[in-house]
Image (tube, rainbow, N blue to C red):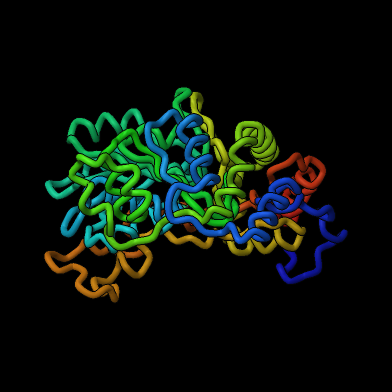
Length: 418
Ligand SMILES: Cc1ncc(COP(=O)(O)O)c(C=O)c1O
């Protein structure tokens, strides 16, 4: 075999550019935003038009009683936990294989995240591992629909109901994903969407909290939407009336211009999900011929909605034992935009390996569980065996460049003597 540093014979397989990265916005949206800037209409304290329109769309699309636009997916998760009344000393079960914001809002609330493992191929929540970690202090279970793939909600809700524990769905990556025709983010006590960055609905930054619970909605308003909005919305006779004036210390409101941007994506969501699903299932069909790659599979009865992230499991045992970093280098040399993922499982990050997280007053009542790097073995394995494909550029048909991706992988296979 040639050394990895040798020049690629015959040049690179991939010569065509990928489509432009998401998010994109129309001229009409740009004109609306420009008008608002011209008129200085860039701030809102109470119930603002674009924010209300976004929330109205969300209530209708997700068929939920309450939709609260917030400043980020992280804020939505913070509101969900606060909305459930989670506080100092409470435990919440959280996946290790997720983005840190599924867990980190719990630190601010003085609660204790307890991590659980995932399936080693699909990254779905391991329901048996959740069951094993439920204890007397468990006050909620968070589940992340990773890469848009719905968790096994029937099994999870059955378990959670049996123990009387509410479920928070982190659907930041799963806009519009369904399981048995039901939309994720509407199945637990609260659903949290990120409307930030390169999400399927993006205001640049933003989030949505979805719930059918008036109590969760009320506590979320008190946490992040105090004064005008909380005072207008919370019934004058309720227990919330007194605290509504000042709230509980955060400003988690979504920026009206972010809502303006996100609205465009809301109205086209279903059509774009259809296109994206066709493009990414087309990529999976192309990759299925390579025994050393395990592309994402979507079980019957599920759909991934926005498909945030497209991760492939690499099997070195079918690639002459080639280490993953060498394999990635060979693909990159052929012009493929693939990389190792950068988001570690949480049990490998600082706050889950140390008691002192630099937060004054944290851990006042009890110590948290800490983890070793190799604990939670499925997530550990998955993190070490995964390749990220450039899904942010795959929101429109890209057959010609994806065919070149296949040629690039074939050339690498030949180079490895496979
Ligand atoms: C699974 C998951 N949860 C939460 C978040 C946090 O969302 P935000 O970045 O909008 O705060 C993200 C963001 O990518 C995410 O992927």
